[in-house]
Each structure stands twice: as structure tokens, then as C-alpha cells.
Image (cartoon, rainbow, N blue to C red; front, side, top):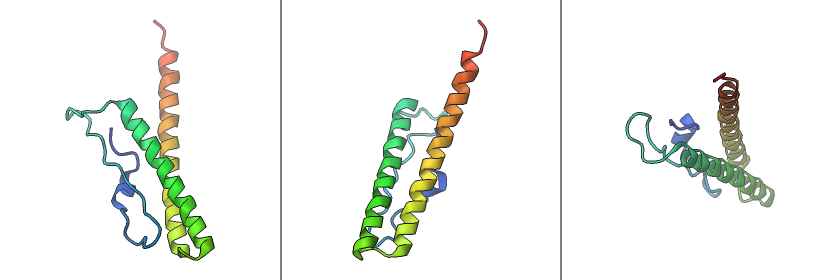
Length: 107
């Protein structure tokens, strides 16, 4: 499975001084290359990663309210978390569509 966060993986922590930046998990493996993990564990890792990004965004908002973070840091963290969540939601929707297709196959 390729990294569902795609270009977000390269963001790292540049530009986020005081607020802790996103912690991106490396992809489990490329399809067809003998990846070690299974789909379930890869999906769970990505869900945990999106949760961490959302928590980091909340911390950035709190940091801005207390004066510890700039508006730029808050916007970056919030947009990163929002994009990651939208991409995870797209994966979920594709899984539901695939399940519906399999469910409707006549045996």
C-alpha cells in the first residue's frame, strides 16, 4: 500500500519552531515487493497518524492562544491535519465501495 498521505510525508518539521510538527510514519511497503505488514496494520498506523496530526493541530491552536505559536504554525498544522483526514476519508470511501461491489457479486 502506498502512503495515503502522499506529499504530506515530505513536510517533516520545517517551519514549525515551537509547536511540534507532524510525525509522519514511513509507508509499510510497496505492493509486490514483499511488504512485511498487512493491510490492516498499515491502515491502523495511518489512522493513528491522522489522530496525532489532529492532536498537534489542537496543540498549535492552544499555543497560539497563549502566544507560544504563530498564526502560520497554526494554519500549517491545521491544514496538514485536515488534508490527512480527507485522504483517510477517501480511502475509507473506496473501501466501502469495494465492499459493496463484493457484496453484490452473485455466487
